[in-house]
Amino acid sequence: MKIAIGSDHAGFPVKSALKAHLCEKGHEVIDFGTDSDSVSCDYPDVAFAVAQSVAAREAERGILVCGSGIGMSIAANKVPGAYAALCNTPELAVLSRQHNNANILSLGGRIISELQAYEIADLWLDTNFKGNRHERRVSKIKQFEEKLAPTYSSSGEGRIVILDHPLVRHKVSIIRDKNTSVKEFRELVQEIAGLMVYEITRNLPLVKIEIETPIEKTIGYTLEGKKLAIVPVLRAGLGMVDGILQVIPNAKVGHIGLYRDPETLEPVEYYCKLPSDINERDIFILDPMLATGGSAAAAISLVKSRGARKVTLVCLIAAPEGVERVHQAHPDVDIYAAALDNYLNDHGYIVPGLGDAGDRLFGTK
Ligand SMILES: O=P(O)(O)OC[C@H]1O[C@H](OP(=O)(O)OP(=O)(O)O)[C@H](O)[C@@H]1O
Ligand SMILES: O=c1cc[nH]c(=O)[nH]1
Image (cartoon, rainbow, N blue to C red; front, side, top):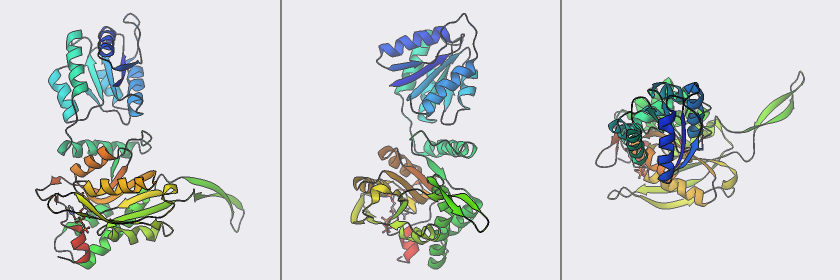
């Protein structure tokens, strides 16, 4: 594994020993200093350098050592995309991976011995994130961070963005209600999809153009290149199409037909028709429900196999299980949802969810 490591003067002896230990175990270690325990230095400088390297995916994980580990973890956690955990015991190291998906380990060089540092670091590096309910909680931290630092998206890692605007939350609550009529459900799905367009298209590239107003010439902006295609997953994805086309009427529309086998819950493909220039467009896959993630992952694989390069998934209600499956299969894909729910029931339905989206849209039950 590629590991960024760093310490201040107080953490230097433990860091040097740990660095040698990690190299011996076959890890690639990038050392961000400091180089001595006799020259005092400021821990935030090292913490920021290591945290930025991890957030930018130059290193898979980071390890920081100062006297207690506290200052390093506080400083590292100011860097968007860094999730630093202060773990001076093996138990905390395991939990910080299983529950919190920490990507930086902070250690107290004056609290633990070199041998303890080896044990803690080895366990931390070997322990995987458990996902499920923890995915939901970690996603909330990422969403909060997204609000504070919306430019954090350059890492290449797919994000889960929850669009929790009050209008969206209001309308989602109505479509969840089992007494909402088919007509109202259909109208609201369209409206929510339309409201989501602003956010899902936020990073579309623009080019400058010269225009002439009735007053004078000026510089304006136009969307660059071949622009967009939306691809609803049949049936329920159809409900989102018109809401999006009202805002971006020139988007091309592909269609993918998938249904979930009721026994296995795995997707079965029955139709696919995509724009021929799909490789030149940003693709938005539409499906109101992200449950096991099987349908979404299959739809993304399908468009990628036809040449799509930039793919985004847009859904209304997501389950943590689905988010995890899509990001495991397609780590590059951003997921936008109007709500992230709790879990799947034994039949693969999202809880609390809204029931079967296709049936509620088309009145087939
Ligand atoms: O994440 P998953 O577990 O794959 O479940 C989500 C899929 O289930 C629903 O479709 P369904 O199979 O009910 O077909 P329909 O839209 O034709 O009703 C939904 O619209 C998704 O496509
Ligand atoms: O809750 C769910 C899960 C899959 N498909 C739906 O329509 N709803």
